Length: 100
Ligand code: FES
Image (cartoon, rainbow, N blue to C red; front, side, top):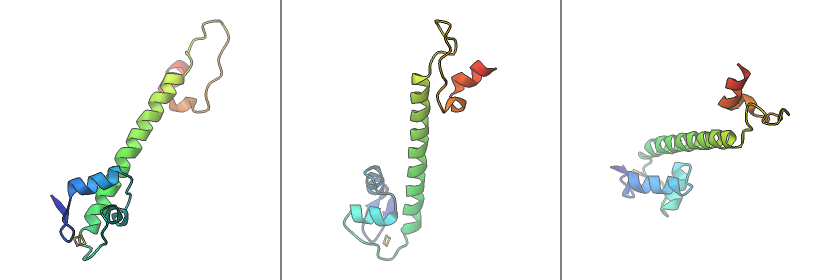
C-alpha cells in the first residue's frame, strides 16, 4: 500500500524507517532522503509511528517483566533467611502470589 504518493513510499518503506529508528513523519522522510511535499501522507505516517511506538513499549514492558521474574529470589527462603525484596516487588507476579 502506498503511504506517500509524492515519494512512492509504501508501507514497507515506512516500516523499515520506523524499525531503524525513525519516530516521526519528518524522520521517515529524512530516512528516505526526501521532504514532505503535499503532506497528505503525514497523518497516516503519524499513526503508523504511534502504533510502532506502542508495539515497542509493549515489547519493552514484556521484557522488563520477564527479566524481573528471572532475577526474582525464591518466595520461600531455602536456608531460613528471608531475602530482601526488590524495589519493584509489587510489579512481579511471584511476589503478589507469595503475599497472599
Ligand atoms: S503524499 Fe507524501 S508528501 Fe505528498
